[in-house]
Amino acid sequence: SPSQKQQMLGQLEAAMQEVLVPDTRRIKAATRFISQCLKLPQSMMILFRVLQQSNHAAIRQMSAVFLRRKVSSHWSELPAATQDGALGMLLQRLRTEPTKIVKKAIASAIAAVGKYKTNNGGNCNSIFQFMISASSSPNPVDREMSMLLFYFLGGEVGDSPEMASHHDALRNLFVKCLQDSVVDVKLMALKAISQLVEHLNGTEEVLGFQSA
Image 1 (cartoon, rainbow, N blue to C red):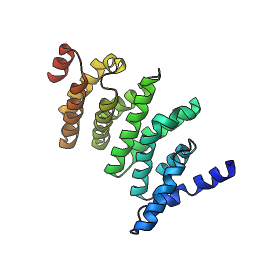
Image 2 (cartoon, one colour):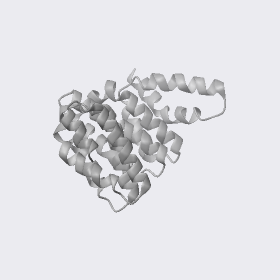
Image 3 (cartoon, rainbow, N blue to C red):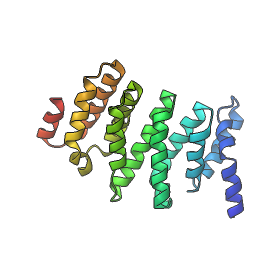
Image 4 (tube, rainbow, N blue to C red):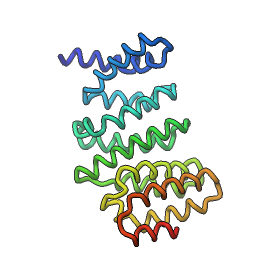
């Protein structure tokens, strides 16, 4: 019933905290409960809230991982305005998240949204614009994050026509980040460009990126 569903969803965050308790029986029970909750499209909104508000990095990471897993089945259930707001929140959270492992989980969730959008007639323009903007930030953490996001996005939509349409802008972005004065930014740019080259089809495209 609707009231039972709401009650379950209200207990989702508490169940996620139970997973972290060193007690096998409680972990199994919590995992079963979470699996049931995640079958409900409304669970996405709970996960978004937990990702924004939880003080526990492990809980935020778990939220982002669950969001990534459920994009393919639940994203279409969200109204268009909610989808835009949710993607905007993920991008903002990626920028402000203080814990690197949680950043990775959020970037992977964003890439899953990008894949869903390109597979369903949408585009990743807001993700690309965010990435390009972050790559020019004076904060090296933002520049590294832009490459981290591209690393995951390249793995999901690297061979899409949309990615090809951004070829020149992305090549310039990579050149800039590969020459960054901060080693972490350079290394992430190298990982990202390696990921993309795996998905490029034309010899000219591959040579264009490798020459960067």
